[in-house]
Image 1 (cartoon, rainbow over the protein chains, first blue to last red):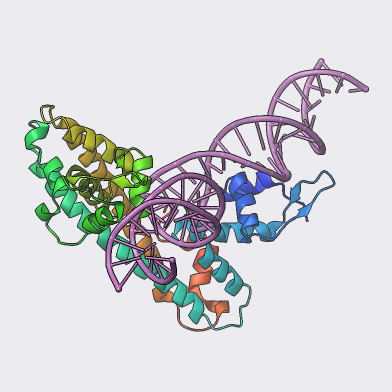
Image 2 (cartoon, each protein chain N blue to C red):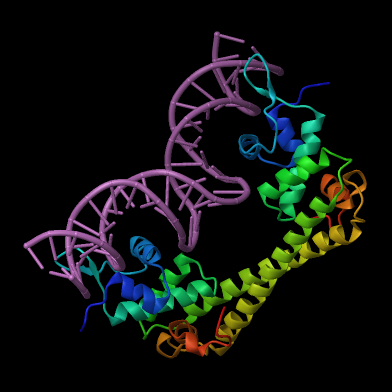
Length: 140
Length: 140
DNA sequence: CCTACTTCCTCCAGCGACTAGAGGAGCAAG
DNA sequence: CTTGCTCCTCTAGTCGCTGGAGGAAGTAGG
C-alpha cells in the first residue's frame, strides 16, 4: 500500500499537520513508521482513524473521550454501553452549556436594551455590572 | 479607612486569592499598597472594582473587554456607545455559541437515540463518528 | 550536478483564564 | 514561645491546539 506523507494526510482529513503531530503525542494516533529520511509514513487506516477523531472533535467530544471511543471501535464484540454512556454524558454537557448561555443571553440582552445611548454616568450597562443586585437571576 | 487584606477581599467578593493576584498582574486591579510586612492592602474601592470584574466575568465578558468597561466606568462624562458596542458584540458572541451548541446537540442526540444497546460492531454511535456522511448537517 | 522551492523534522512558546503547589516568611492567639 | 493560619513569590499545569525558529530532506527544472 502506497505510503501517505503527513501533508497528504492533512489534506485528506482537513486536519493541520501540527495538529496531527499533536494527536500523535497525545496518543490518539499510533506512532507511524518513518521513511529513510525520518519522515512520518501513514496508511489508509490512519486516514480513517484521523477522520474519526476530527469528526468527534467537531461534535465537541474531549480528547480523553475520543481515546475511549477509539479503543471501543477496535473491539467490535464488546457491548456498546460504554460508548452510549460517553455520548450521553456529552449530550448532558452540551445541555448544561446551552442552559447556561441562554441565561447569560437574557441578562446581557436586558442590559443592552436598557442602555439609552446617553453618557457613561447613566449607562445601565455599567450600572448593572457594578451591582449584581440589578440582575434578573440571583445566580449566573 | 481600614485596610483590607487579600483574604478578606477574597471572602467579600467571592474571588479566589490566587485569582485576585492574577487580575493584578493582568492590570485589571491596580497594584495595591503594601503593609510593612509586604502584604497587599486594599480599600473599599478595590472591593467595588473587583465585584464589577467578577460580575462581568460571570456574564462571560473577556478580560480585555472588562478592561475597557472599567476604563469607561471611570469616565462618566463620555458617551456610552462604546460600552454598548462591547455588550452587543458579546451578545452576538453568545448567540453564535448557542447556535453552534444547538446544532451539535441535535447530532449527538440523534446518535444516542439510534444506539440500540447491542455490541460495538453495530453501534450507531461509533458508525456515525467514523463517517461524517451519516450526519444531519454537512457542516458542524 | 546545481539551484530553488517545498515539505518535513524537532523543539519551544503562546493563547485564555485561571488553578495548584512548593518553599518560605509574617502575624495573632494562647 | 509555639502553633497554625495567612500571606509572599515563583513555577508549572490545565485544554486543544497554533505558530515560529532553525535546520534537513525531497523534488523539479535548467
